[in-house]
Length: 230
Image 1: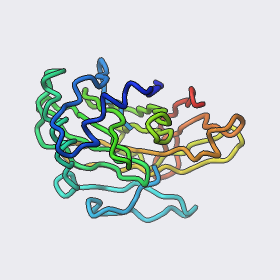
Image 2 (image 1 turned 135 degrees about the horizontal axis):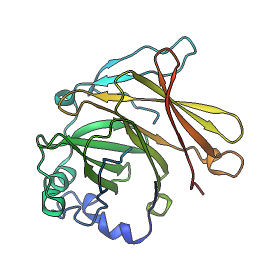
Image 3 (image 1 turned 120 degrees about the vertical axis):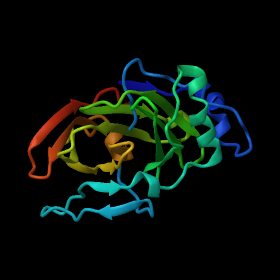
Image 4 (image 1 turned 180 degrees about the vertical axis):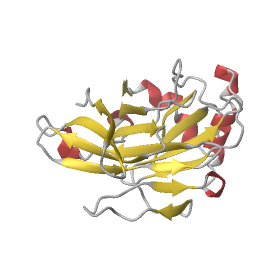
């Protein structure tokens, strides 16, 4: 699915820019049946174990203990707790950091019904999307075009397979990029990824084509076509 973010969203997410603002994310998109979220992962105290690189030197899966992860700042936390006013969702725990990159941060929180709520904030402090829904068992990926918010093109998503280890992104020019997964422990029990597309790979002939989910042994578990980037 492609999320084209326009100028109107500057107003909708303005609450995340002002740390004293108590507005919610009441106008954010809520998917009908599943969580959509969400890579070059920055080191964080919330990450309790970094799995060593593979023989090829590529990043591998990272494991994060939910209760040790960084709590969301007050504006983000307030937005999560007010989700129930728009979609009838109750959080089981306050949101915490799932993935932090130089471009953006993905926050997640479990719901009392076993699902998830997620939200992305850019490094500029602007909100870039928030959603709630059931946990999705397979590979889920969204492309968010955030240039009009002064942000990047983000590939973000979730992975339900427990044997998933990493992601391989293939570009039109034949090059590839390895995208690590961050597996967040119970009560979330889901892996997440967040990847800012380099400018060089936004040009025709160099754009991403396919995202493939791999096991630790290099076996293909799932793949998704990437379209709509411009």
